Image (cartoon, rainbow, N blue to C red; front, side, top):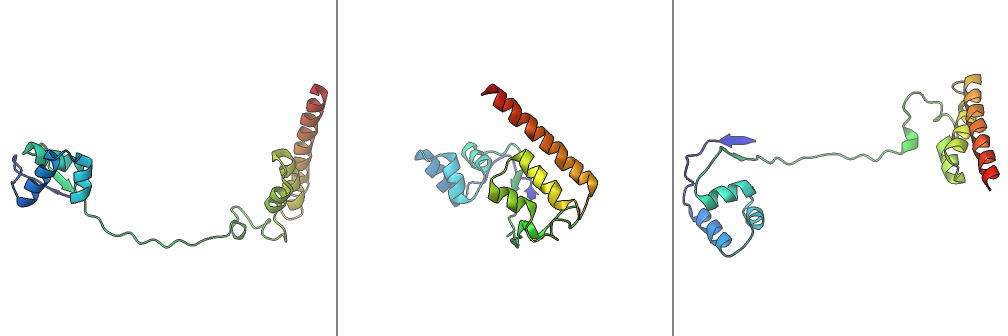
Length: 142
């Protein structure tokens, strides 16, 4: 942003006269600011006829961004054990409408040969134990 110091009084230019006339017609400061591409604070300074602080006019430069669509299955954080599979576990979990505990059982069983071995099977067993516990508790309440 470019900051410039201004004298205490706002210069009476043809543009500023038009701004004041528009404000006197009852048009809001916000709408006038948008119409003249100025800040609302600058409109107030023009209306009052003096500047309390330095005027900071933003320098707007065009932003050019390239957006590249990425398939989530093509990216994996922390290894490639899921990308090596024909069907990624999260696709199966979603397609089958499984919940958190069932989904984690599927995930750990599916990856155990490619990543964590017996430890992954124990994780799957742990989630399965919790799922059974929840279902049994729910059945007792019914």
